[in-house]
View (tube, rainbow, N blue to C red):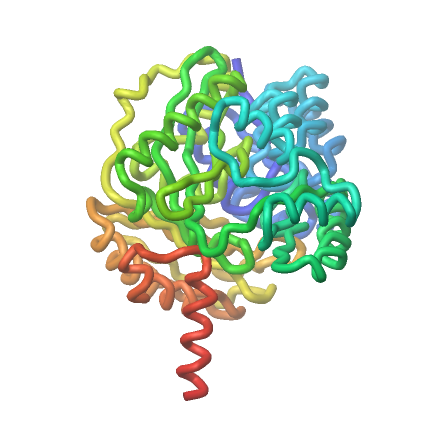
Length: 445
């Protein structure tokens, strides 16, 4: 049984996990870098351990220090949160070898899904639709040219072992393929320690949808519906909603069924997400995120299921008590990510409250946004019975946000949420770019 959990992360997700531990009566231990010593997670946890200086390689990516801290504090398990080591198969193996419980999938599952080429092959074996692409790593320019000729331009090069827009390049014609391949490989190596890339047909302006799943590894796999993550800036998600305003009931049922089938084949354990691109009436498997995701709150709001608690209970060896028929998805939820555009001290801070509003953050007035880590300040989440109502409540919530001392994307989010295109629900991944172009023309008009 898990009595004590070490949280190997920082920021709002560390706070989120501390609170889940408190609800379950489990002792929480948070690790922190020297620059994070006064953050909210450190204050709320039962204990905290400094694991190194601000540099991520010496702190939040330092697996040896993290496992040593877990052993020192007599923890039973490690929760990796999101990002950092959460999808690192070697870290999961090290945790298992240390006799600790890794709160997430088995290390071999993470290793399989962490390679996009292997993940696509697994999806194909379950008869999931995939975009035309390479069946293995792109080795050199001649290989790239031959593959591109077979699948047709435009194509996209992706880091085989990464994500988040890093190691990714879109190419529209053969003349640009050589330089794009070099840049993609270089970025992949720098950010993920692996320079391998693969190639897929590039879908212009699709929708980006993902299915949230829970699986106990004992035969029960549940889906919690979909999230629409189509509003992006440079392949980075800006806001998410559930359910998607464009998905038909029949396509939703098929996507959820395919996702469950894939997790059953994998004998998956824990929370995970299957990501898809939707192009008209067709959808295509993209990847699996073998971890909790930043946008998980919208799925929690529509399903009334606490995903972090579920992760912990599954890791504790419990079988899911629910069946799919017991999962009732209700209402509409929307999440806006409020990011800092620069590091610095927050001199004045006010987050929204009131009916239908949830805020996930780790910052308080007087605290600082560090230049060393992700610029996320807060996630503003709203849940009401209807999409139009949710949008209006979100606009109200955003109008209450006050952040002084540094620049943020708050006004950008208000523009996106209030736009006619977003309200219509009929948009693709180019919504942000189109709105920026529209504003630029207006400013120069």
